[in-house]
Image (cartoon, rainbow over all chains, first blue to last red; front, side, top):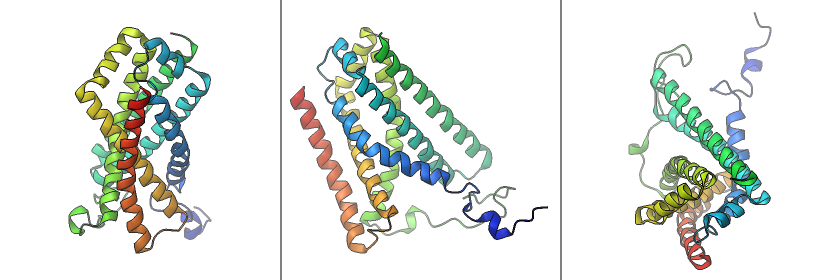
Amino acid sequence: MSMRTPLGRVRGLGSAHDGTHHFWQKRVTSVALVPLTLIVVGVVIAIPGRSHADAVALLGHPLVAITLLATLLAGIHHMHLGMQVVIEDYIHTEPTKTALVLANTFFCALMAIACVWAVVKLSFGI
Amino acid sequence: MSTTESKASGPARPLSPHLQIYRFSWTMAMSIAHRITGAALYGGTLLVAIWLVAAASGKASYDTVQWFFGSFLGLLVLFGFTFALWHHTLGGIRHLIWDTGKGFELQSRMAMAKFTLIGSAVLTVLTWIVALVVR
């Protein structure tokens, strides 16, 4: 039996029993994504018209590649959190909700791995 | 929140009212649009991954993907992607302003909602103008 008071147990947790971790991670990634989005849009619109070799040289440039990795990882983490909330808002049957939340995690993990693999390969030579 | 009986959620509790009960307003429209553009960007990440993997895989696969993005359908998708990106970015900045506890007055709410829509449209067109000029 816990000696903690009911108020002490729930303080800072909220109805999700998970504190504000989810909320805070969403905010941290969104703050990071504002400048990163501006830079990456600038990079991407410089791509059309370039040959494959030129595109690879640009995307694999250390500054570009590191910025791309930061954007992709922050962005995919952000969308993982966001889609989980959308699923939890609209799906009220427990097995379906669990399946979709898992599918969301697997999709986001796959996107992150594929994007990181590609940017690393673009950086270290094709 | 769940209405189903389960150990985790306890007895069925009422859900908050959903879309159909609200009168149209700019703030509700931009809130819905924020969620829709977020979901669109979620799908768009698959296109980003395909593009990057193709570029990393070699000239042939890259040229195929570039051919698609240069087609009418591809350009249409990219245009929508651009709008979703700017709309979600501006909507996100609006939320970050609200997080500081500011901007909840009727005037500022309305101004920010309208700015989100007009700003994202302007930024989308600007992005494409720059993209076409530097090409």
